[in-house]
Image 1: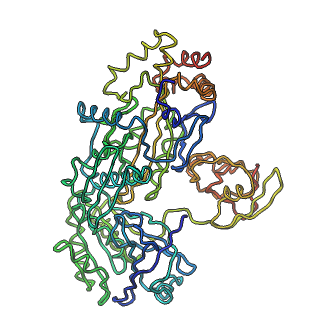
Image 2: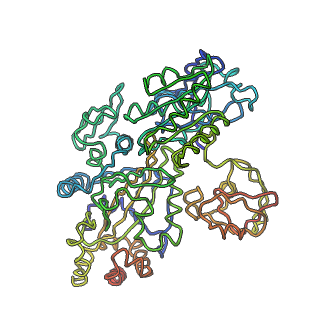
Image 3: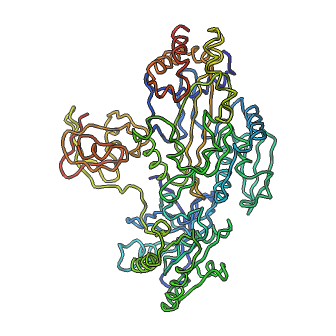
Length: 324
Length: 311
């Protein structure tokens, strides 16, 4: 096993069948999903053994490229709302190390994992060391996008996204939900994305849903944003020249568990994207995963494989999994 | 709908015909936060009524509602005025948002008449907390000045009237003189809403900038009971109001794939071989709905004839 054991035990293997197509695959959040080697899904905000490492990586990305974080001015209440909501999720998921308490007009946040104890007053930015969305983004492994709902549409008007899978938050900020998803093949024609939008616009305060998405990434590289294409893009050709042993170690199944929360006070939608990765070598160690992943990759239509950027090496991935 | 139990911890009858209730969690826990303009649906001795939440919206220790006594109504408000007492427990749904402020608005112009002030109160509280530019016009009957203190807290940006003529003059002047990007929020009797929105339309306000509070949530209504039959087993049964076909089938031991239970994911699509369908989902296309040979069991229902499900 290459990965830390807890990353395998909690891996959200995404394939429920031998074929994959885009669908409005939303379900209520919070229920555990058993896998052959463990389970995932009990918590909306998930902390694992990569916590400190991934937060350091997020901080480094933001220091190099501040456009990964943006808040349009009207989203200020939504950022506070998101911060409180994520603190509540952390506190309920990890009561031993995190807590959120109210003291009259003020609040006290404790995150023992990072050695933080912070008193703050809702709506008063001077009581926090950073803008509230940036502050909480420094304490969760999830990427965050906040969607404002107005004029019968949703707009991606705030967010901190450092681990984008071949998209650019800085480019998308302020766009409508349909514009953001414009490049994805089949979504408009099949009605998947308009249905998703209608569903999201009807979410009521406090309701939380989830879905998964997936792709393949070469190397355990979280930041495969469009901004850095020049760094990671060439890997897609390079990978065909490596040995089988290296191929299984380098090619990762990358799964996003996305949570959708209607924030109660601002009415905005908080979209969390949590990225999990396992190398094919670890996927193949679980036979049900190995067989299922090979079947899905082999059957995946060309346009989807092309959009996911895996068309150049998916055949080899299938071969590799089948002979592993 | 998941129901919450709330205890009446205060009753305020200071204002004639309007009873204000403070409702708290029986154990004193904080209640879910809510969006400005939200309401809760309260079980009023058998009938369900929606009332705006007028208290603090962030992790409140209590929900506050104000109920106007309607003698010609279905009886819910009379029950609250005549039957409900301090210490009683009521059942209510969680807060629902259907009249939220548009966060990007340059200014918020709130116009209310009578008990229509109630959904505006949380707008005002939120606007003050977040520093939004808000103006309020409020007309009420003599002696019925509900929440006048909260409105007056706006200072020069609030105006409270009891006389129709001056109110109308000020309303028309206000509607004619707002910066671009102002959003208008209206609540009151139907004739009042009609008058204000008509005046706004005449002055060129786009419909997308006008927001009305109409009680009743956009949640699916419980629907009518209908008869259904499962082709494979011949089983016949009635699906009660408030129960979905999916729930009834599951109760009877049928396994139906499902995910969202909201009519969007498409998982619980079932073929139908006879009977009219009341489609209520977002998944099927108009053509598929017209074909009438499939339904989404989680939200859609049958009609007068028995619905035959080809399971």
